[in-house]
Length: 423
Image (cartoon, rainbow, N blue to C red; front, top):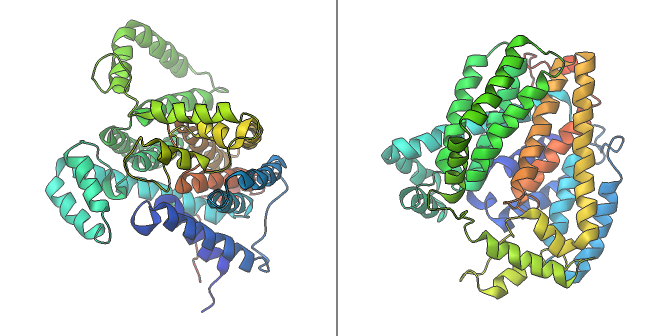
C-alpha cells in the first residue's frame, strides 16, 4: 500500500487547524507539527502533484518572508519559532489543492463546528454527562481541570476544545459555512438554519463577546452583498425594515451591545486585562518604530513585567496588529497587512467574477474563504490570530483556497460528486 505524502500533509494541516486539544494545543507541540509539515513538503517536492502555486500569489509574501528573516536577528533564538510558523503558513498557502480537497476541508470544518456545538450545549445543560465524557477525552493532561474551572466557576463553556476563544472561532466559522450554503444551495436549508442557531447559541455560551457581535454583522453584510444584482421587493422591504427596527429600538440594541461589552458590570468596557497587554506593545513600538524589537520579543517583555505570576512560552498581546508593530515595526506591519489585503482583494474580485459568469459552486467556496478571513482579521483586534499557530495556519489555508479556486472549474466543485479516497 503506497502512502502519498500530499495526503499525509493534508491530514497534518487539518490536525493543526481544528485540533485544539492534547499535545497539539500546546505551543511547542503545535510548532513541532508545523515543522513536520515543512519536512514533508521538502520530501514531496519530487511528486508531480505536489508543487507550489506562484501564478496568482503576490510577491509581497516573499518580500515579507525575507524581511522577517532579517528581523529575527534582533531576537535570536526565540524568533526562530515564528520563522518556522510563517514558513509553514507560506507552504500551506502556496501548495496546489484540487477541488476534492477544498470540498473535503470545508466539510470537515463544518462537521467539527457541529460536533463542537453539541459538546458546548451538553456542557451547559447536561454537565454530568459532558464532564464524564470529557474526563475520558482529556485523560492525558491538565486540560480537563482548565475545562472544569471555566465551566463551573466562570460559566464559559468551550466543549471538547477546552479553550473558549478557539472554540468560539470554530463555531463562528461553522456559522459562516452554513449561512453561505443556505443562501446558494436549495437543498439542506432547514438543516443549515438549525445548525446556525445551535452554533451561534454555543458562541454565546462560550462568553466570547467579540464573536457574538462579529458573526451577525458579517452574515448580515454578506446577505446584502449576495443580492446586489437582484433587487427584489422582499430584499428592499427587509433592508428598510431592518433600518427602521434599528432606529426604533436603538436604545435597547445599544444597551444589549453595551451589556455584552461590559459583561453587565457597569459602564466600563471589560477588557480582561487586555489594556495592560496593549500598553506594553505600544511602549515597545515607541522604542523602535521602524524595525521593531524582533519576532516573538513581546513574550519576553511580557514575562519580565510580572503582569502574570507564571512564565509563558506564548502570551500574545491579544491584539495582533499592536504586537506586529512592536515586533516588526512599521516596515513589517505594512508588508504583512499589504499581503493580507491583496490576497483578500483577490478573493473578492473572484466573487464578482463568479457572479458575472454564474459560477455558483466557486462562489460558495470563495465566499466562505473571504468571510472566514474577515472573521479572523476582525478578531485579530482582540486576539492573537497572527501569532497563535492554529489560527495562523488556518488563515494561510483560506488564502490557499482563494488562490487555487481561480484555477478550478466550477463543475469540479459539485459537492454531490463521488469521492474516492485511497492511500
